[in-house]
Image 1: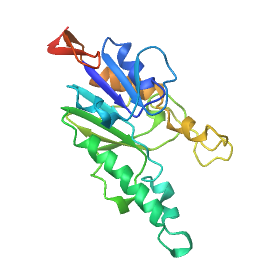
Image 2: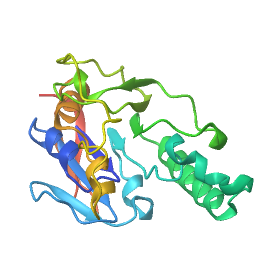
Image 3: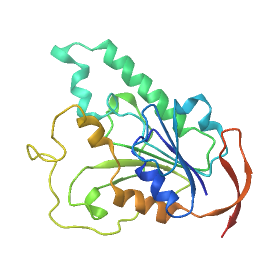
Length: 215
């Protein structure tokens, strides 16, 4: 299967699909933290999105879309026009990915602010459903895909409300650390949504096209 992992710098989801024999690449404005596979350090809208993908899993920036930051839209009761503009730009990217001509799409984001009117989400997941003992409620928007099934539900997960825990640690890498996909979730995506296919041709990006025959 030919898989695009958009807006991913960690390589975690991409590498999970590669480890199961899929032809997966990642793309982000940041360099990849993993050298196991192909990574394009560029805007996904510059051309990569329009290759003939079988599946795309996207993690568009959520800073200005997240409900957690909605309170900053009205500092002192006045609408922050700059933050509103950034939120609308983020929605534009989200919708561009959502409307891509790809048969199977998953977009991952935290709880969104209602003010931006994103499409209705398909499901939510938690890391502790996939063998990670922490909470971090995340929404998935799915097209052409079944809901992701839990693989190993743990009891008494650590709350994100605890001061000083993994989610609330500060530092310059705070946002990056909170953005990485949990490996258990990535493994479940690759296992439940992936079907290896046969090589057909190479595109201008050097990416291998595939036929619809399962090995």
